[in-house]
Image (cartoon, rainbow, N blue to C red; front, side):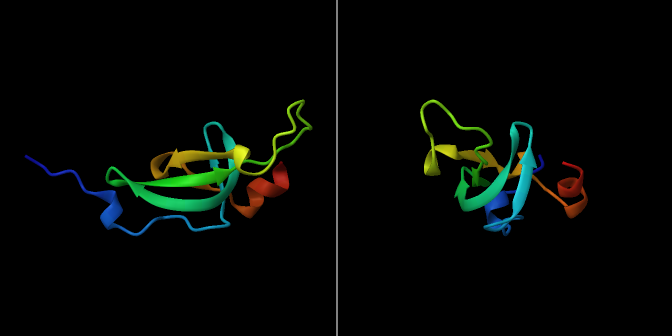
Length: 80
């Protein structure tokens, strides 16, 4: 029987202030913590339009597992 590698014993792949993308959008890493053997990241998503409710700050931060994230490279930013 093969053992499943505990990812939290490996260092996190991303660090604070890195720009990342995931299926639901993009954002900036603001936090990282181990969770059930995996790395879980707080990703602050940009507020692109004025909302009726006036959401700002931590309301735009979502938790995303490491496996769902990838870095945004400079070429991707220039095309957007």
